[in-house]
Length: 302
Ligand code: CP
Ligand code: NVA
Image (cartoon, rainbow, N blue to C red; front, side):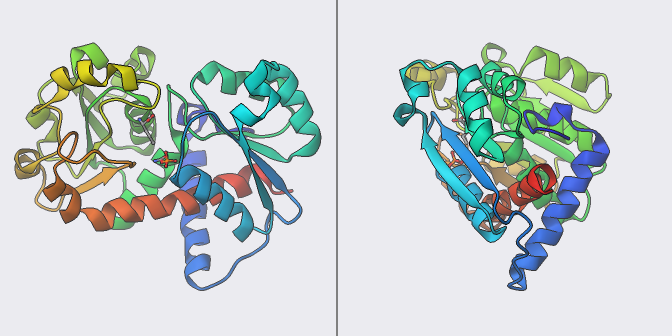
């Protein structure tokens, strides 16, 4: 494993190695042990979109690992004034030991990896959100004891979260059911690949997707960069693509609920369901730290 651009690049063994390492790093933290696996290492963190969890968990993660993280707002860099990504990649590779980038176009992240000579970590693109789904899988396994054979249901827009949940869920050995409107389906290539596993379904029937689910997941109807479509999207999603009591009633009695956050209450999830499952959702947010430390140690450690 050289980079983490998308979970689709991982083998099942690499995925489980990351999850196991995330669990053991979490145990260390809970015991107050902070092994400096990345002493003298520096991670650059390029952001062209907002972030709370990704920025803080990566920065804290590097500090806990004995390294340093640099927050690089793309607008303050020459990148924001048109310096090419391929030049930025070659320059930053001379200073840094790794780059985490959150941006719009996935091809920009691929270009960074192609021209740079250091590990690149995708902290979210319009296409996928692999770090989030590593944390999601860690959280599910923590609560359920296993991932194999569990049914995960995603309700909402076929966005970066849907794409990564499909990639990660199928790779982990789960059953994945997505309820997404025809206008906003997940990536075609990703769904085709998932369909070949025989463990994937895509429907517009929310209750059918939620039926007997062990885990229900949702995300905002309009992602970062899609704000101007919010009103149009609302017409399609409202009252249908929501985790609510009706979904919970058809899911398994002990079903858990995840949300990558930030959440829009009474849109993709009701306040009632959100608060009833807040412990799981905030464990999920915490696990960003542990899962990403596993990625950092795997990619950056000598
Ligand atoms: N879930 C997530 O990536 O959160 P931020 O946008 O706050 O980083
Ligand atoms: N789908 C959301 C996820 C935010 C963490 C977005 O891209 O804005």
